[in-house]
Length: 193
Image 1 (cartoon, helix red, strand yellow):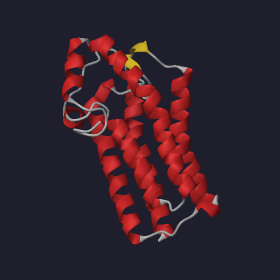
Image 2 (cartoon, rainbow, N blue to C red):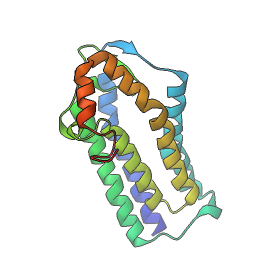
Image 3 (spheres, one colour):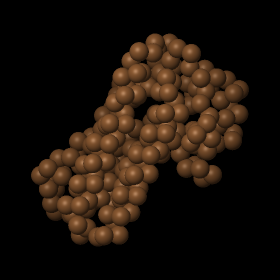
Image 4 (cartoon, rainbow, N blue to C red):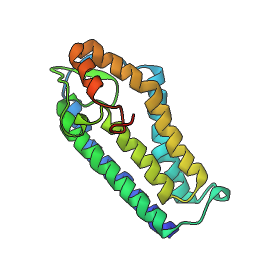
């Protein structure tokens, strides 16, 4: 069971990169008109990368820290697979919906438009939701408490310091249109938060 969870996690991370790569290439061709990149944001992005990719990959490769392992269960592998697959689906449709507006950092691009279709009809930040689903999926797929916490901490270190800044930037750029959008949507969990 443990090996199955590890293989599914590795395939999921590879799929995540395959999804992201073409959007990252396209984004480099669209001029940035406003950037809020900061050292704090860099730390958040690095934390997410470490908790959701680097540390779990180290665990898969070495089995360390073995003392934090717990038994892998079929139900957990199934739940983790569903969560991770849902994360990848949401990650893909979020990128597709954003199109040329997407950026890995807090940036406003040339001819930036407010996107409120697809998953953005229900939540303002579906890409963050996909990271949360990935972290939860990782906790079920990789049977280790430290690795499970690393994914959740990585998500939290990216999301909580960044989301307020991102929303302020959108309010500054789109004004009342974004405020109205905020009124009718939740941040990352439809109808809840």
